[in-house]
Image 1 (tube, rainbow, N blue to C red):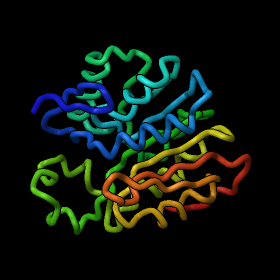
Image 2: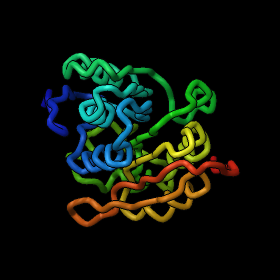
Image 3: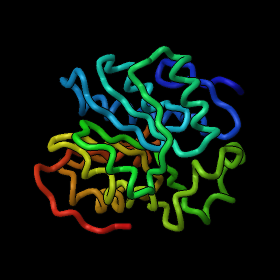
Length: 217
């Protein structure tokens, strides 16, 4: 379709990038709520795709320093295009793989980690609605149990939050308990939010002052 509305913005979309859903606006709102009072947060948006979440937060926090990270070349091109299109210059695009253990070492002292990762179970993809199956599979496939990327977030990325820093992620149907269990070592004040259809959609929390890192990968 070429363009797609999201959080009051008009984003460029096309082949190779996921069209952001209205439900994902709840992820932006929850992260913004938890960051309220921090005028210049240091934010990392992983699996950024079109940049929807990063740019939504940039519109809420003009003083923020936001890194939008995306692995795939086609999606990355739309991320770069949308930064220019929206004029939100406080977002910087970087190309990296969330699953790469070395990538996280370049980030520390973050105020927020946000992510809308692939979370559909591999075996469920053929049964998705036709319009969803037209999306790039790499933006949908969360592994056999749908939790592959949440394990990497818990192991590699949440430890890069500063104490009191926040995390917010979108989740798939039936995944809230498992995601909370993965995050509870590092995060306190875990909260599950439902979308307008009544499905659990967002998990958020704040970094504990101290924690014992566990292995989830």
